[in-house]
Image (cartoon, rainbow, N blue to C red):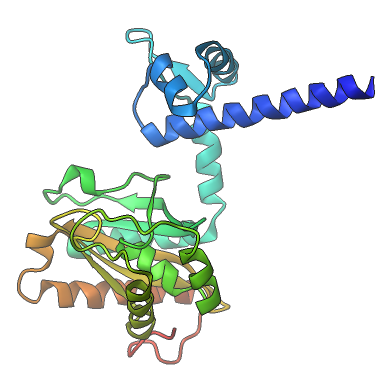
Length: 273
């Protein structure tokens, strides 16, 4: 009996893990996907994926389009995800400031956190400006930290030991000719960001895209998020635009940090590391 219970528990845990894997894949794709494509992505048999999808649909976590028969996330997944996001004080506090940034600069604004060496975008306010559609991440999506403005700012919030440990575990993939792929060069860049309190991504993740980011700190002085604006480099790097934008973004990040209880007597000059 003990052995039987152990096997049943093992099968149950495996089913849950596989169901969560399916949910993660549906979230990552972001568009309706066929059963065959989904099975290929998660590396499971068609019958297994179909069985788990049926359960997820019964619970409202997945849906199937009647016309195309493709699968997508259900409203229940949105409700749970949204509840998790709103549980983060930083998101609720930063939201009005994101809107203010867009109203002031008219460039798309993002709020991001660091998770397992990746940037996770937890909020976004879009610009009315003409943008390059593929360059902006969706809320909930992930991206590389080493080649994005927000990512580099978040890495700068780590201790030297934490940073070196992380860099030994994640690949520094090349996306463009501007991507930093050498660990020593990246460490030097992170140290510079600590000193000036902001980061700029000039086409390191996507060609022709510029991103300006600054750290959001809590009452302990820890960097808990990054706020950034992104747009076409041709528009953001013209004239003295980038200097003006940098000043505004850093100022807004400092105000959000103050709302989180961070006290920096040097605010207005240079951000502390």
